[in-house]
Image (cartoon, rainbow, N blue to C red; front, top):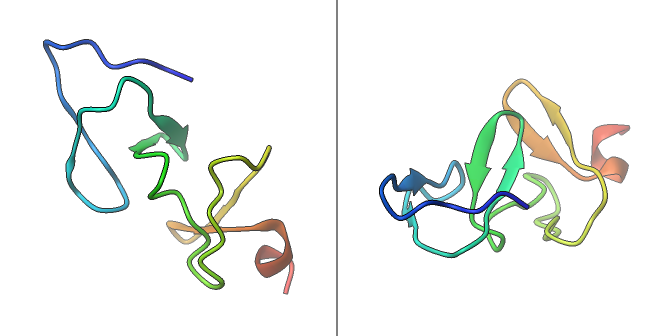
Length: 67
């Protein structure tokens, strides 16, 4: 997991808020709070998943992506 240096604040792609946590998730070239990376369909939190899927800028879990 990448860590944020204190001199440059990152903005979460999910909520738009400043990421002040020590760690964040990086998915589809965007930074996310760990709690904000969720499937856009079923709202499954993807923080602990090994993979997530993207289509048209939206994030999906494996099951919803292949529907």
